[in-house]
Image 1 (cartoon, rainbow, N blue to C red):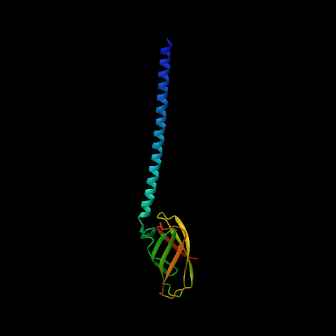
Image 2 (cartoon, one colour; image 1 turned 180 degrees about the vertical axis):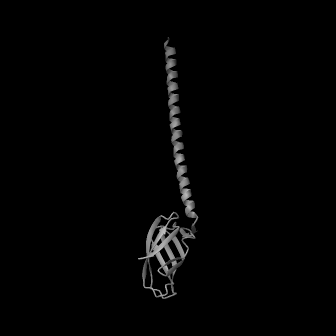
Image 3 (spheres, rainbow, N blue to C red; image 1 turned 90 degrees about the horizontal axis):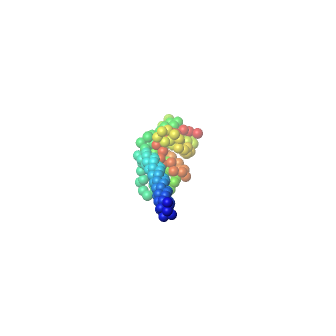
Length: 164
């Protein structure tokens, strides 16, 4: 064999090897990109699902102010003859405020009471516990409960109440 034919074969082998390497690199890039896109899509779906669950009862009423519209959270609650009603849970700037009317239906004047509110998710799992004070109340009297915390808990589905 002549040197020219050997050189041609070497060139063809090198070109074929180079083409295979390029195809492998392109394949790796495509697989990596598709894998990353798949992960992003799954994360986006999860975020949308969480978002849609929350959005079903959380509404932005002003820029940065959100209010909880959960019917379960807004149901009147009773503890030790005190009815908690007209409940409003809002958040602004990462601070959550629970406002409610408290009416003394116990039949007797109540002393100052410390209550514990347990905010829960739709599945019943606990989000947080916050504490509030209910002032002394005459029979049939109503006062406002105002509890604030420096965390964003507006996504609560419901709450439980107990006295301390």
